[in-house]
Image (tube, rainbow over all chains, first blue to last red; front, side):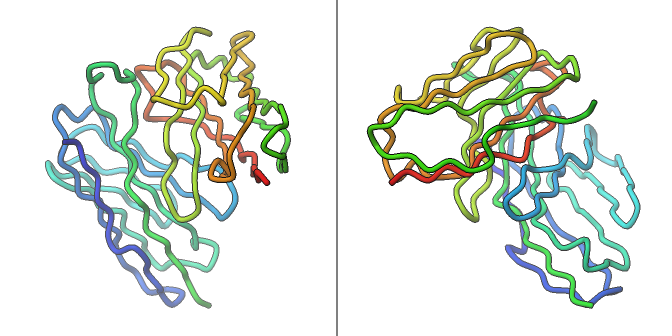
Length: 115
Length: 114
């Protein structure tokens, strides 16, 4: 069964304290791994796409990496405005009766950055 | 325009009411999605439209009825809902269904069923 697990569930950091969020997955035929940011009461905002092991993407203080079993979202010198829930999702091939574009979401990591 | 808009932002309805949620995008995307999200949970896929045709219905109860009038609009018609249907309803779009990982989400409609 396809599964996506994110850890930790919640992470509290001081401003400037770098850390990493983890997304581990067990899927057959990974078509892509995606990171989203979601602020309370709003829709998720797309951040990164990773397709193959060894791939890295960066945007401001965020850097996403991918291995064959997991992805990390590294946050360097975070600021309070980085506080949000970070969602990891994987796209898998169409299963019987399923969607071609089906995303399987993890439960997210809630990040709080204190000034 | 890289925005997905949703109306209304908030909706309160009784169990006997009929209401509709609306979603619009002008990015030329040909795949559109409806998700349901409960508090502290990830989005849960409900429906997928590809080229204005229903591609997938994730076993959603018939009290939810989707409609895609054209390539830019997506509606979700609601009838005889239950209190447990209260949630944030998100609309999203992607260039194609096969590129469905990179989705643009709207701000959502917060639905409360009394």
